Amino acid sequence: MSIQTDIQSQLGQLVNNPPSAWPAEIAVEGRAGRVSCAVQAVEQLACSLDEIQYQAQEPFGQTPAGLTQMGEALANRVSYLLEPIGNYELDEDGMTLQMRSIPPSGDRENLSFYELLLRCSGEIRIYRYQQSAGSVREKVPMEFTRQVLGRLGNDLDDLVADRD
Image (tube, rainbow, N blue to C red; front, side, top):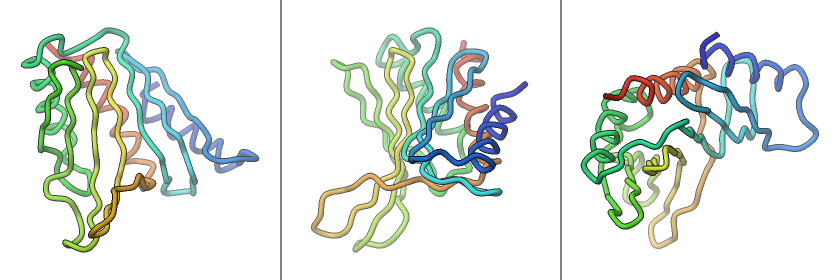
């Protein structure tokens, strides 16, 4: 089975047997790692998530250049989100690459954007933030169709499994 099929199956189980408290965790094993999501709500066609995490079985991007290369490959592969991903910031000491939507959605008064963190330990985390003018950004749920979430899971796993 593929990650996409397994994600669809687990989301279907949440629709048919909702948990007593949200968020609910789903987790799927792939060829090169594990995708997990904190699900806030799910319906027949879509779901709302607090975060998406991918944990590779092996570390990746052991050098700053390697981590940046992995980020660029991810941005090129995952081109179907609400905004394109770019705007790389590398923390060489912590070996973490931070990427954001470029440009963010909205206007100057109210912006929404994705943030992706890639760590050389093999971890990828995806969040969505909203920021109003003059305020601190706050994490908000991400909304995906179930099909797009499955595709994203497959793409994260394929990216890691197929890296050179």
